[in-house]
Length: 292
Ligand code: SF4
View 1: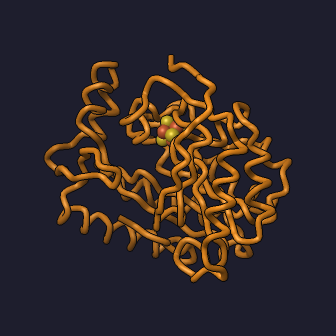
View 2: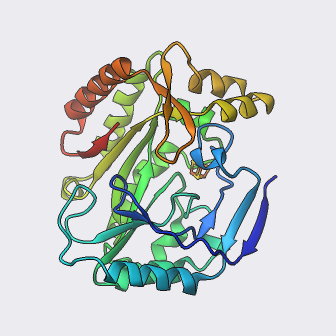
């Protein structure tokens, strides 16, 4: 079992990111006890053994304040957000899962109340305690979705996909901005049929008045050779059979410098075309912010 360690971080770096957010904050928490830690989680490529809770919130929030206030405003609209400089606060953990470990309301307050900034995080957990907060559409939750059969294998003990889908409307009505995070998209026999069912469930759950708000990021699987070996050593043979398919994959240098594998590019182009065609057939109102 990983250790949970409180510390004061000196790493106050704010990274640029033009996909899920404009920037990634310094870590409030670095590490995760999520159910996907023994399958595809990229955080586990770097930090498997410890969940670091960074207690010096004052330092992190001051750094963020200085950063956002040095940016031009109004912000030029982009696919991340038309209005606010948007910061991912949960790139190295799951905020909904680890909410008890730190003063999340203080972090949410900073973003909600700042005139130029917005926060965002992806999650695989529906935490109804967050519904007691009033985020005024300045906190964007990205619920992670994949077919339940694959989620059961790759993300054991996370919230059921049907509950995550039902949470879209609930969280949006509570004042969160809600997006979808189709990640990772895994290719296997019958994958498109299962995505058809998933898209139908989303279509049935999201009422017309919320469809303008909901948008999606879509990220095909990457994996990593050392992570693959470690998962196999720990007995995760069935999930690795899905994640590690050398006949379909090729090596790539990941954005953060580590070695990774992804679907071979010609195959991946075809997978993307098939996935987008199906998506557009069933939930055309959901705008795809980016897909790769
Ligand atoms: S919830 Fe996210 S950060 Fe946590 S183990 Fe899963 S993929 Fe990793």
